[in-house]
Image (cartoon, rainbow, N blue to C red):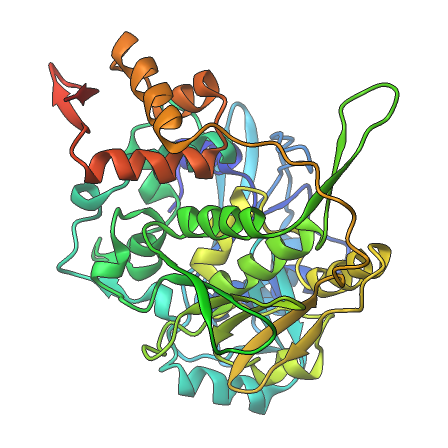
Length: 454
């Protein structure tokens, strides 16, 4: 059962994969049943009644007749779902909790439909046979939810990636790391870490799941014959996303629109929001059970192709561009907390609109076996002349990082990024090179982490 401190922690983290807020009992109590059904079909969660849309405790009163109506509605979920309904007193106000464990007999159906918790909302899925087939094929468990008894996440934690997540997600810097990991439900009931946690926060998840990397390849011309550049990015999934995006930006043309006032506007030959959406989709939704392929970013003279193993799930294929269902809800939720993933099901329409607004053809989607999005590049004649701004050479970037660290070896990575003015992905690329060349390392001294320059 949740206690007062648990409710406050939910307020800090906000709605997500495991938490839903309601200011009061909905007029139609079936809305609560839909949420409960969604949690049971995913990884479990809690509905907190008495929390406003602005994450403030307003309290709620549930009379016996209303409580009976809720229980009657929840009783219509089939098969019978386990849940607990109880009040928690918080600062002289009552918050009602509906606590739902992950179901053991998926899929759960309410009023003829399946509901699945995805990110911070529930999706209605009407094709029962298709969903039953999905749960059976995936052994009724998502790859990123499988526990790993032999992995110690605290021992393998990439602290830079974690602190970046905590900052962007708006989590308190005073909360201990183990408590945050627990609150994010990154462990199972036996406190074994889940695979998605390892992929998102471990220094080298590829040591456990060699397929969990992003490969970027630049080809000469329009055919897959001559390779000009070939990079494979590993490490925490957030870092893979940043490095792959940085690689794309280093290859694409960019021009600038300069107004009389204000900063100049970057105009990329392919809109950046489209590239970001395609990359995040590939990383979040790929089939990690498939070990024979990786997320692939391929660039040709006339196009960019971003592919991931695993075609669309049947229910998504029938509602392509309108519904979304992640194979990896834990990973998806962590990206959602960083506001990198927006409204579910809206990504495809946004990509189409952005490409058309840029005067380019709509993206082409292939959904069988692999999910591939093809983005057309402008022809050479149509490309706007690029304004070249050379970055400092590699040696200069290394010197800049080392100079800042020498002055204050206890600085965090985020502070170093701010002081050097480097892009985050560029900083981590060069930091890794400095570590590999043994010019720098991080040690714990007097209970504090600090940098050592050799």
